[in-house]
Every structure is written in structure tokens, then in C-alpha cells.
Image 1 (spheres, rainbow, N blue to C red):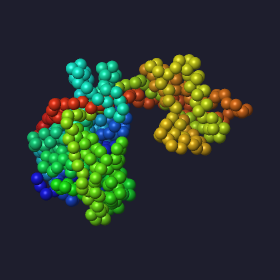
Image 2: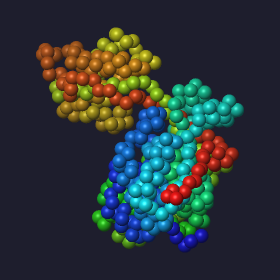
Image 3: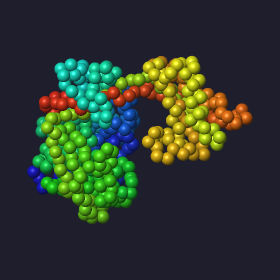
Image 4: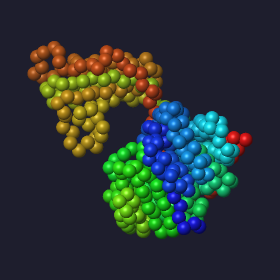
Length: 455
């Protein structure tokens, strides 16, 4: 095991918006041992996975991949990208591999070994395991997976741990494009392979996964550098105006956690409950006292998405104070007029009212649902046919004008349409699978392939 290993993280989501070149080049000048970036997220919702589409423009993906590839090949160090093209499907892996080949040709790069790791899971494979009595346990309060729910799933991916990436590096990969993968595992893999303790390696991954989100003041898409030793992790901001402080690094450990002390990955859990944070210099924080506990049974997370229907969207604004005070009554009236013609919402259609200015962002979790002086209502209808969704959305929006409220004497001024049209949204999808599957072998749902690029 070397004394230390440094990894440059240039972005928390490759391609979502372009990497900032300045701090990235400062990071490359520090001569890290690897350049690693995550390129996917559940935050984008179930539609891109179910439809097998990327939500980030390919131009931005290409921009980020080119920066990383040229920097890594210039230093002769590994480059690792996880969750390729937003969702980590086989399509995304193939897309990124093609972009990398094209960049290598255009820049006449010296030959290098490219590994692709696919982790898309056929629905029949999961069905076979269910039929064999394997329990696929639900996460976040979900029931265990059933054949009925699986049948509503259009596409599944397995969220890989460190093992497939380590296998690719062991086989000589210099550039790794991985399918859906745990954010922290893509950083932990090269550190674990180099011999560093799992606890230190996984903490390194946790703090680097969102790049400059671990620094202050807030700056998106700037690079940070993480260094791991046998018992500590240090993290340094690369942008001259940003610092990694005790507060910023400790708070990032809590980021996106139901419990701020634990980070669950395939095969175990990182325990951060006793971490010690120390300011090493103005822009660097040192972290110690993390622990890692292996699970008795190796389990991997499955993500799956299924289509619900076609979506139509309309936008209305309300400024009248009386109407705002009775907004729930107004919405109930509009709903009732839809139900008169289409029946109660359910399998045939769904209708949603998002009230921005009151609780449009947080919904029922909003702690202070006091309406503002003006409201924006986004009306969303979902049905199996676009034509039905369009009619339902129009009916549910236009009846906001005609709600019968007590004391109303005028005939106008209740609501205004942003535009007198219904917008066609992308199809609606739902998360059908958010479960864990036990595996006998961490590699069994992944396929690792190597090729020589530039020969």
C-alpha cells in the first residue's frame, strides 16, 4: 500500500452542467493519482431510466468527458466515470464509450485500454429469482418486490459496488466507463485496490461524490482534491475562492442522508458517527475516526422504473386575494368538473395541482403553508393516451376560472392563463423498484469488457 493516494473530483454529476475548467486544471496540476466523476442520479426522477434517455445534453457530456480524458491521459492516470449518461443503463455506457473513442481519435491520443461495465438487469432475471424464493427487500418503507410490481417495470439497473471497478483496473483498464454505480464506490474502488482500509476509502468516496458541494462558499461544478492515508482523509478545494472547512465537510457527510451518520453501500455501511474533523490549512479539512462494517449478506440495490402514461401540463396564475384565500375550494371545484366527465381519478387518469407560492416545492412536508400574494398553479394530467391527457388538463385548468365561491360578485379576475394551450410533457414514469437483492458474487450482475482504443 502506498502512503497516500489522491483523487480529483471535478463534478457531482458529469454533463448535468459543464465542469468549470479553471479549478479542474488547477487540480490536474496537483498530479492526482486518478480522476473520477459520477454521472448519474435518482434526483432526475424515474423518466430517464424508464424511457432509457439521458437528461443532460450530449454536448455537455462530451465537454466533461473530454476535459477528464485529456487530463488523465496527460498524467497517465486512471479515469473512472460511474452511472454513465444519467441513469447508467447499457445505452449510457455504450454512448460514453463512443464519445471517448471519438475524442481519442480527434486528439490522436496514444493507445489506452478502455473498460466498459454494464449493469442493466433483464426483468426476466429478477423474475426468475423471485420465483426461486429469493426475497427482494424494499427500501424506504416499500413492501418486498412482487411479480405484479416487477411486471410494471420497463427497465432495471443494479447499483454496483467496488468489485466490478476493481476487476476492470486489475485487468489493465486505464479508462473505466461504468453503468449504474454507488456514488461513493467509484472513488473508493481505486483506493481499496491500492490497499487502503475500506473505512478510509469509503469516506473518501462519500466526501468527493459531489465535488465542490463539500466546500464553502457554495460553488457548483468546481473541482476538489481528496487524499486518503491509512487512517485519514483530507479534502482540499481547488477554486482559489473556495475552502473545505470543518463545517462544510461535516455538513456534506449529512447530505442526502435519512440518518446523517451512515452511508450504505453494496456489501456494508460506512459509520461516520465518531468522525473527527480538523482544519488542516485554510482550504483543507482532515477527517479521521470513521469505521466500516461489512454486511453478513452481500446485497445490491436495484432501481427500476415503469411508464404510467402520457403527460399534459398547463400553467395558471392567481392574484386575487379572495381566490387565494379559498384556493383549495377552487381546486376542488375544478377537480369535480373533471370527475363529472371522466369519473374518479385512478387507472384511467391522474390529475395533479402543484401550488407554487404555497407548497409547490415541498407539498405536504411544507412547514408553513401560508399562501403568497400571488400563486402559480401547474396543472398536470396523466392518461394512457395523449389526447385524453390534453383534454383532462384543459378541463382541470379552465375550471379554475369558474369556481363558485361565496361572496364573489364579479365575472373576471380570478385566474389568468400563462398561455392558452396545453403543453405536452414527456411521458410519466414511476419508481417501481427501490429494493435490495442478495448476491452470491458481487460481479454476477455486471459485465466487464476491455478494448484497446487508438490502435
